[in-house]
Amino acid sequence: MIQFSDLHKAYQGDTVLGPVTGAIEKGGITSIVGPNGAGKSTLLTMMGRLLDPTGGRVTIEGRDVFTTKSREMAQQLSILRQENQFTARLRVRELVAFGRFPHSQGRLTEDDHRHVGEALEFLSLTQLADRYLDQLSGGQRQRAYVAMVLAQDTDYVLLDEPLNNLDMKHSVLMMRQLRRAADELGRTIVLIIHDINFAAAHSDRIMALRDGEIVTTGTIPEIMRDEVLTDVFDTPVSVLEVDGRPVAVYYS
Amino acid sequence: MKTARPVLLRTGVVVVLLALLAASLMTGGYDITISRLIEDPAAREMFLISRVPRTLALVLAGVAMSVSGLIMQMVTQNRFVEPTTTGTAQWAGLGILVTLIVTPGAAPLTRMIVASFFAMIGSLVFLGVLRRVALRSSLIVPLIGIMLGAVVSAVTVYLAATFNLLQSMSAWRSGGFSGIVRGHYEPLWVVGIITLAVFLLADRLTVAGLGADVAKNIGVNYERVVLLATVLVAVATGVTSVVVGFLPFLGLIVPNIVSMLRGDNVRGNLPWVAALGAALILACDLVGRTVVAPMEIPVSVVLGAIGAAVFIALVLRQRRHASF
Ligand SMILES: Nc1ncnc2c1ncn2[C@@H]1O[C@H](COP(=O)(O)OP(=O)(O)OP(=O)(O)O)[C@@H](O)[C@H]1O
Ligand SMILES: [Mg+2]
Figure 1 (tube, each protein chain N blue to C red):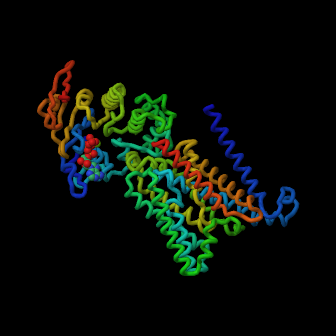
Figure 2 (cartoon, rainbow over the protein chains, first blue to last red):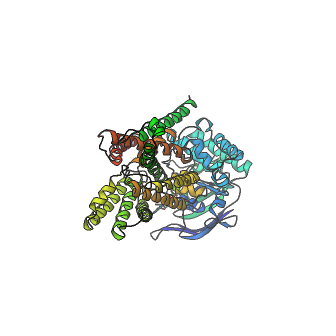
Figure 3 (cartoon, rainbow over the protein chains, first blue to last red):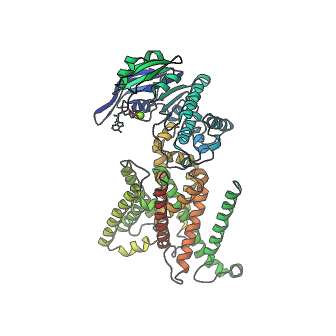
């Protein structure tokens, strides 16, 4: 379980998040949703220890993410940011192999190679493994980044908008793969997703943010309701049932 | 083809390097042939006292500067930095002047330590400024470094003029290998230690090239890698500056060419960067020694001319490939 208490972030005295207190349960997929600027990335990057909070703390299974040894943390928690632009020219396979660094410190074992191969396969990158990152399309690159994080083989995986740049097919594939990682490998996955229907279709829980506050956290039926979504997104939303699934409609 | 090309390329680089080494050893004011070396002890002595040291110094300095460029480009995530475009080398120059002023008769070792220390300050100032630049891959970064270097150079010239040391400074600045004889170049062997350290640090440097966040995510202490890298570059620059002076652009050209050919994995690239760095400086030195023989054009001048052209080519190339 990831727990955060009184977690707070301010820039030059302006609070952009919190203080918020809450938890991400172990196992399954939790999606964080909310409008632009709500503080989703801020919350996720603080949970992933990439951003120092102004106040409060974050623990994963009781261990403080900011004070635990970095290498140990890296074997338990991995995070991918929303924006990634690498100037270093690496091949896809090389990049994904660096996901094994917390385990191997650069000396790849058989086991590491297996994980790298699996991660590449998982994101249908095997054909592209020997290409340089700058020779890929935006969506292919995004998949390579996710593969790197998955190769890290951590219990907790935090992904900030992993569907960025992905087409319909690959969005669905990515969500299925993440679902598999959660169900078969017992990973705890936290995602930021913009498409609420995607979140509803593929995750177990949704955490909704607005204006730097957590509005609500709950299961899909608890969140996929007119009044809840209208409140979170500050725009009229109605939830219909299509093929037995709740679908939010907000185009009007 | 996929396997044949790298082998061919590797063999090519080794052959060219060996040829340049031989040419460098055989070129000079008096004739030295292999048969004379075997028969004539005086010629052999001459060869060992001046030719071999000069060639070794070139190789070591070439490796030092190109490996320094490689390190700096990784930790700053910018293709255009190297010791002379970050102010690091200019700070080393200031350090040398300061020793000339404070303790004129200082031992070379003292000068190297002071120069390295100043180079370290220079790198840290540059990195400090860099923290405030949002777009790290941009051309603004080397521009800032070149400006910082220009300011430090100006201060150095001013101080040199004040203390009547302009002449010793300009002699030093022009990057001379002509005065290198046995007993002068040996400190450059520290380059070997630095290269070894870079080899041990290789993966972490590549990770640093992916940025602080990726580094942290996989448990690499980014700050520590940057600091270690800065120390290595400072020592390489400091020692090279004292022994042979400025060697501009080498650290820029060589890692960029290697990166185009084989990407940015530091571990695999290191031997290439070292070999190409040595080859390029040997070639430039040969050009400098032959075009106006029996006079010599300092290698730094040749490097400057070639380097500036390549620098412009790189900039134009980057504008075409926006993501480069
Ligand atoms: N470095 C910064 N300095 C000042 N304000 C910042 C900084 N980074 C983020 N913010 C502000 O913090 C708020 C929350 O940003 P955050 O990135 O967490 O939003 P988000 O919910 O992820 O939005 P999006 O859906 O657009 O990604 C925004 O209002 C943003 O302007
Ligand atoms: Mg965001």
